[in-house]
Structures are given as C-alpha cells and as structure tokens.
Image 1 (tube, rainbow, N blue to C red):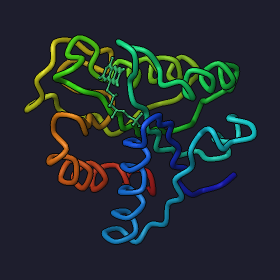
Image 2: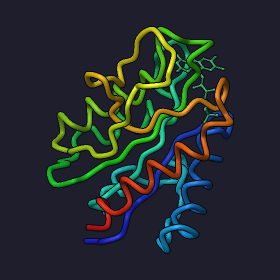
Image 3: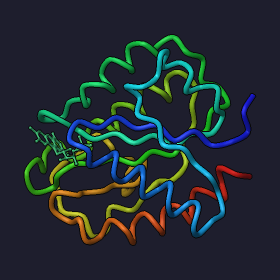
Length: 174
Ligand SMILES: Cc1cc2nc3c(=O)[nH]c(=O)nc-3n(C[C@H](O)[C@H](O)[C@H](O)COP(=O)(O)O)c2cc1C
C-alpha cells in the first residue's frame, strides 16, 4: 500500500484544476512534499484512487447543488469501495454570490457518501468570513473541508490554501 498522499480533482472550467496545481506547488515549496495532481477523468478505474490511504480530493459544485459531471460518474463507480482506514482532506470550489443557497453542496455530498463507506475526514475549516445562505458542506460552524471561491473571492485563495495545507499536510504525513 502506498504511503504517499494522492491528490485527485474533477474540474469543468479549470478552476479546481488550477487550485490542484497550486497545492502541488505549495506542498513542494513550503513543505518539501511532492504531490502529483490527477484529474479523475484520466483514471482508467476510479477505484485506483484508493491505492492511497491518505487523499486530498478537490470538487466544485455545479448546477444548483449538483456534482461536477466527472465526479457524478466517479461517485457511482466507487460506491462499493471499502474506505475504512482512508483519511481524506477535501477542498471545494463554489460561488457564494451566484449560488448562495447551494455553496459547496457537492463537497458535502461527496463527504457524506465517502463517510458512509468508512472514510474519515480532516481539514475542517471555519465558516467565519464567508457569506452564503446554506451549504451541504457544513458541519456545525465548520465546512467539512477547505472552502474556496474563485468567482467572488479569488484574492483570498492563496492565503486560505497556505493555511489549510499547513494544517492538513502534517496530519496526512503522520
Ligand atoms: C452553471 C453554473 C452552476 C453553478 N452552480 C453552483 C452551485 O450550485 N453552488 C456553488 O457553490 N457554485 C456553483 N457554481 C460555481 C462553480 O462551482 C465555480 O465556478 C467553480 O470554481 C467551478 O470549478 P471548475 O472550473 O473546476 O469546474 C456554478 C457555476 C456555473 C457556471
């Protein structure tokens, strides 16, 4: 079993992909950790993700609270995987201004699904400073993973990423 961290994402218009590349860069430059971002569309079998015990997963929300297209297919394909022992940190992209009632819903839906299959999650992130109406990614006063908004708050992404990675990478490497 691979001891490294797997970094996987789905992306329709490239924003989640850009963030995955930023994660690769920050992990290397600030933490000396080599990550290889993989688009889930490039996996022959999505269950190959679970060759890793520790994962970072990136998911945007589309179409009023729906999965991004590739994730929708992958969620179905991995629905029988036993994820006991898998530790997952998630980052989600959405738009608080355009879709305030559905902000990051897909990140919450994916977490619910993977948790039901046995996975556990790290990298919860405070809702302080965000402005939205509702989100399935909420757990009390926290998001289940890092909340990003490249549409309305792109200027905040770098700092959020650096803070979040400083929190989750040591835990994923432990
Ligand atoms: C048609 C459309 C529907 C969207 N629906 C939602 C939504 O329901 N909730 C949300 O938080 N963001 C929503 N967004 C914003 C996207 O999640 C955001 O633009 C994201 O950065 C796209 O990531 P990608 O380029 O990796 O696909 C929507 C964007 C578009 C264009």
